[in-house]
Image (cartoon, rainbow, N blue to C red):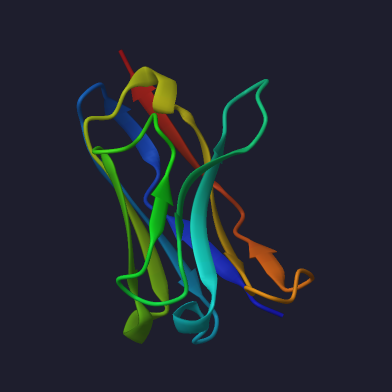
Length: 120
């Protein structure tokens, strides 16, 4: 069982920045696909940033966050980050960390979520 703990959410004004962290209970990120997702009230959960297995590998960002958000990983600290700059009110949502195995679909874990609120 993998336990993911997220932190870093909060209230910020438009144009501000936040950095979300997701720390795992074990050394897993180096061999898993990691990502950040978000869910706004009344909307479906959507992908924000998903990184490939290898550090420096392909990362896919939602069009709405390209150039503003950056996903990174520190394998030594078992932590994945989401740096969010130039925040907009439409970025307001609960943000979730996800880690999954590239081949075993049942190996798929979520964090508890952290609220990000951007005021106009």
